[in-house]
Length: 519
Image (cartoon, rainbow, N blue to C red; front, side):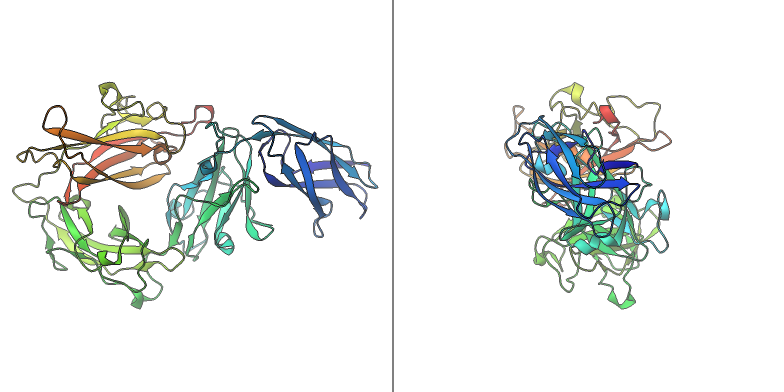
């Protein structure tokens, strides 16, 4: 007679101090297992408590133990116990050992490579269904209170609306193995383990003809509440289902639809987003050129921002010179349908004479600090592999002084001046909006920061700088492409009061996770 015992959380895994966990125990035997079979834990040293247990009516030999890890143990303590099975079958005792760990709660925050996906019109399977336009990688690095990665700890993942998680397909970090959604008391979701380096990684594939706005969260029961993902994941069509549902086209100040767009010596233009039904604070307005989303997006802060040219702007260089382009926008609304606008048609004529004056580029420093020339990261062409160096690439070394997700991994400096004849620098006291844009394999990041340049000049009596910290969470896990081309990282800024843009700083980025050498 053969018999065996297997458990859902393997020997040697991590658990969180104070955690409540469900341990599935599967008994297999060559003979029928008695209905009177039950499981106890023994030799537990008060570090773990069995709260309850149940037996599945659907899966033979499946038992679930509801366990609680003591809140009074120390980080790194071993939790040892045995499973004793009372049954008509002589099952062996099952030794179990876990390691108790503390948890930095916000390290459970999920991040997407892309937070907007196309709705596929045909089956969407890994690894490259719909040319990758309808999938995204999702990731977090789970850490303890000291910032150390936690290996092999299970995390529960679900969506705010539990049924929404059924509207996508989920795959393991190998981008191949499908993850089955399971019921956990009142929630549907998945239990997913970190790897040996604390990485929690999985893939989301949009389902055929299934638009949805997903709000994912993570949780470790007994320890955390629901930890929301960094953003909502919007899976949207490229046009409304009903052709009569288009919103009004955007307006460009001083421009009539269908003609030539000239910059008149300016670096940027103002945009009018007409009022639309059901507008709410927090709606996200994303601009599109030729039906392709751009990096320019604007949260609606006040309803008064609609219907005028006061709040939204873009640089002219977003358009291709001499080509007919369409200009439109999409409105993402949390928990509601996505809205699409009609298009404005234009042909950008290029720079006029005199050429518009752009402010100087920002200066980018590594995580080792500002005002030290050796820490400056130089610009570089992401496609120029031959001349790539440690001084012109945002790499693991450059961001290595940051550890937690919110630690500064880069510092960006913008210099202002009180010299009214110097048009290369913004005036002192200006409020600037800095835009970070990353396009890497496979991660895409867009983030805007706002900060004021000091009103008083520094020691030279003429200039002053403001420094903006770029958090680690926005620049990690950016891989190079297969042909050795690095990811592309850009910084540009706009002076809000003048609606004037800077030149764009363009560089290389390769901060790929590589196991023990993880950035």
